[in-house]
Amino acid sequence: MKGIFPKAVFCGSNKQTGYNVVWSAKMIKDAPRFNADFDNTPLETALKEALKNTSLNYTIQDKNISIGMAHESGAVKKKT
Image (cartoon, rainbow, N blue to C red; front, side, top):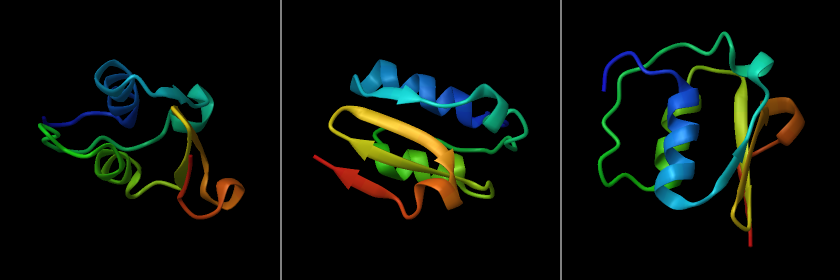
C-alpha cells in the first residue's frame, strides 16, 4: 500500500489479530505516511514499520497494544 498512515495499521491490527490497540489521536496526527505491504506480516514487524521515523513506540501486554511517546514507554516491550 502506498501513502498509508500509522492509524490504518493500528485499525487493521485490531481487525486481523483481535488485539486491542490504544493510541492518542493528538499524538499520531503528525505521523508521516509510508509505503508498505503487510500481507502475512507478523504484528510486531508491522508495528515497527508503522512507527519508524516517528517519536512513537509501542508496548504489548496480553492482547493489548499501547502506542505512546518513545520516551514514555521506553523500549518496545512484550508482556504476557
